[in-house]
Figure 1: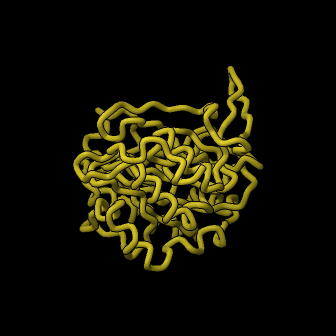
Figure 2: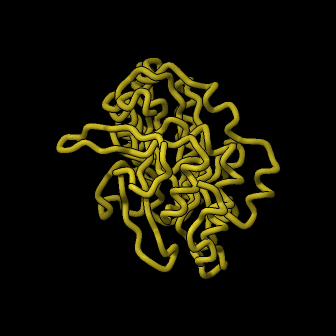
Figure 3: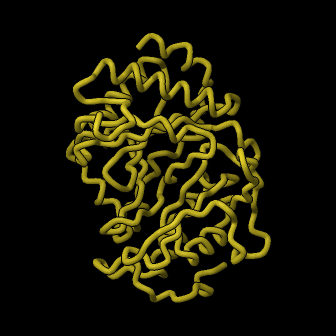
Length: 290
């Protein structure tokens, strides 16, 4: 599908800023060279928001009938059903998803070619205070602990108030092993910094602390891709960062649809991401040193 084939291109998705469905599609067309490595051969879960900021959204896993002919799909057996997922990697696929009202891009941690074996670990850092400053402080503690294990990590804004930290790994372990590592690592780090960090899933038990969420490492779980737009005021997107850029003073809303062109003029902070795949077993052995 092309930009010219969009239906209702003038429909306003962000009333406060006046951004339209066509603006959304143009965003993804412009950013796709950088987005493509994180969606290529990767299973997608759709979050459809046909009225943008004004209406309701719903999630959909099954590939819609309205996708272009030849759209790549992958059949995955879950406990009680088989789901035919859309597989990313083509610009026409992304534009077709926009046409269906998809604002963010939710990706699996594995590729269609090895769906049960992830190629990254991700920590979702969720500040109970709602302040990005707390997420940044937690992220820097996470980075230091990972570096002490000899593990390389890559941060990005979530596109909202949080921070995502990715660890590229070589394909091999299954989701169960990766999730167990993330849970154990988070538990030990939270125990070392109990006033700031927690692994409590229950919101009322967190006490305003920063939640280190490991659950995006489960089979079938998703995370918003780098450069994914979000359904938030000002149309922010999930921006890859270098660690020196992760500061409590950083305002994540500055990365938005309106200044994408300026941001793309700089170098890609994650240009070495897939070149830095690590042996997962080494990190597992080292985690008990925290």
